[in-house]
Length: 129
Length: 280
Figure 1 (cartoon, rainbow over the protein chains, first blue to last red):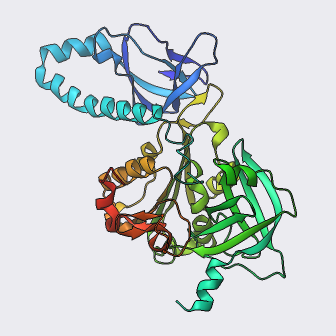
Figure 2 (cartoon, chains in turn cyan, blue; figure 1 turned 90 degrees about the horizontal axis):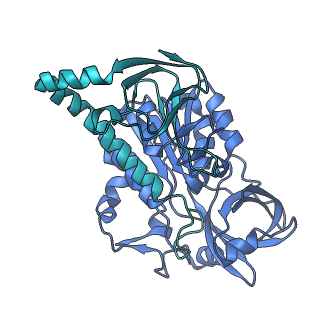
Figure 3 (tube, rainbow over the protein chains, first blue to last red; figure 1 turned 120 degrees about the horizontal axis):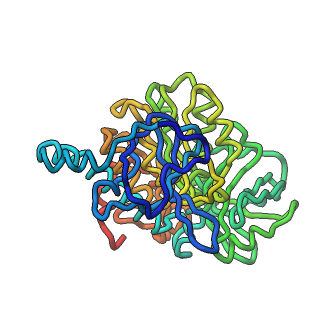
């Protein structure tokens, strides 16, 4: 599938009907807060999987995903994948083993981002950090 | 250390503000020249000076200029406390006392022949800029050169035009990320350690220089280790509350080290144990 610059691949709260692998381009994950400008909280590029909401109930997306440039993705039908994982536990386990590190890495990164490591430090430390 | 040499290190020399440029709302760069004569100020990448604002106080600040241009002394400073906030208001011709240079340097010459990965976060790019100047001045001596930089938001990116220039070179890989961004930002969003996998360097033949907030250094070092960069090939700049600059006063003591004298640049394997001591 191809998404042109600015196109939304999915929106927050939609049923997660697809699992994507980015082949080319870059994708921003955005949060919309009423009364404020949208905020990009993560960006993904070629070689990275896009979205894991399709794997975890209730299978709803958590963010908006917007193509930052012309983006090509491989799209998998989420319901079909889930059904195959149920029918073939070895396949399901293999896929979970591949997705779990992605989910864990993104969770860790998100936690590092919210601690605001570049914010103003305690004055007793240094003047340049 | 001879008494005369010691006195020289403890005595501030007067410098004049040649230029003050605002890099971000709370970050600025001071360009200084000696008040008397045009004596050059040689230094090594990674070293710092004690800058003294007469009547206000003295602070340790890394040198952020080009070591090949010792005629002008450049420091990039974040206005955080009394002294640095007062420095932000200096005008051309104001006098600043300078003691230094102090401390250890990035092993730029020792890295010749290796891939070099430079990871900076926030204002940590300032102490690394002299090393980048030195490496790019002798670019052919190095393998792959990778510069990875993380900032809070796009408007907090330091030396943005220089990063773009370095990134425009065919022989240097530059990638920048921010923790969060408005929707018109076209670059990366995420932590700087997430960029490490994109550098394309050979871990066992890599020398890494890391500087930034301590927590960022920790994550970056872990990510480098996970990719196979040996601890003895990772260097980082540790910042503590430097006062005397000569290892006498003990303000900057970190475990068994005086950061002002044995640092700020440390080889990671020499201090890895201290990273696990939370009380420090």
